[in-house]
Image 1 (cartoon, helix red, strand yellow):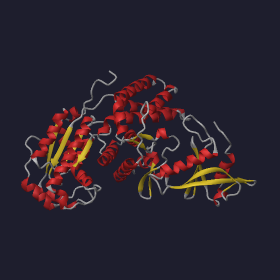
Image 2 (cartoon, helix red, strand yellow):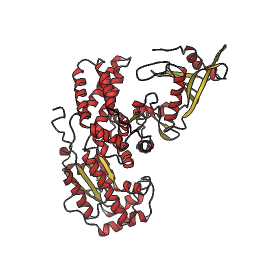
Image 3 (cartoon, helix red, strand yellow):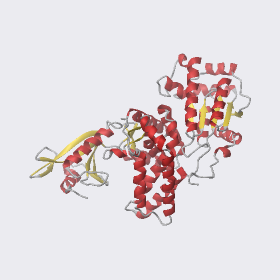
Image 4 (tube, rainbow, N blue to C red):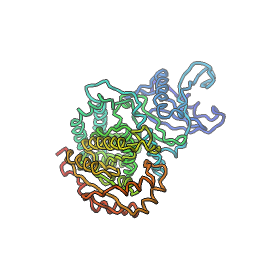
Length: 516
């Protein structure tokens, strides 16, 4: 409901003369009036009051504007400039400070809408490099975000699930979808009830934090050359004080919905190599499903019923897909000399095993860098490659693999595995987890390996031709692994690997769902 008139405010902010003649573009949302002019954006809260938000007075809107700037400066400090007052005297609304303050606006730096991630994706311009940078940005943001340890009678996920169910109950989906809605509600509640203890444990262990809350592709843009999440939820802490993986799940779901599972897998694995939140993956399918259901719910309320109903139905299908059945977890180990193409194959295999997000990929080169406090692309000295440090690298890799397997995720290990002891330890992890083990050893002629190693730059591997020569002198190929010639194109190597790895078995879905 409208609590007081903002007509004069909107008219003032819509008039070019109040910006020195610059053209004004106005955008109205269900919560705000947004005015784009020159290099600036001015955002005014609408004078509304709903169950989930109250902007009914000038003072409440001022606090909401201040909070919006505060929460968004965590990820976009250069974009959010501050809060500015609007005044009114006998001559009308003005910027100059005449009269009393009648409204407040968030002032922002304007960015190119073509640089939003949804637009980049739609035009085939969203690059892997940007996704990697985004994963680094989100992971650091989550690690620094304020922890929320206060327990409720139901977890924050339980409250969100209740809201979705209540809203879907009150809506009319497209004809014939009523049974699908009811089925999703049943499956989602079962998955939630099954994981209630895990959700409570997540809060105790600090994984529930003050997050972004609305982290989808349209709320991320390239700004000053960096991926920048913006427009975080500021009006309702219940929607932002959530599990960090539920926050991440929104952008993952968005990528999957656009059939970009490769980018989703890249984002997830880069994020996890920083946070090491592998145990939390047991909740990922519930989180992804809920994010898809939220999109279905919102689209179903749209004023454009035909197109929105179709899109809502597509999101409902995706929400169901995340909950129907489970993929059978596997442990795949890709070993071989430097330059043979282990990482390329590991990333490709990750999309063949597991869910729509793909398998967890654990790469020794990346782990080594993080143990040294560096980003994967940093260069390390010889001390980082001592036998003691290498033992630490494999120890961490195996520990994270066990966590991910226990969470029901397939895992691909990417390392040289020159030492037979490390190979045996990898096999024992699969045996203890009661999952199938697949060992792949890549080979290629020496001249090809030398050429590849000498041409690599800016990656996670520090291997040189000298290092390669030492590997070739002392290593023995494993006797019981699949030996694959990787001297050709990456696609050929992948096809050979798929031919010997019983990949159909890896993708087998359990016939029985949880509902059965």
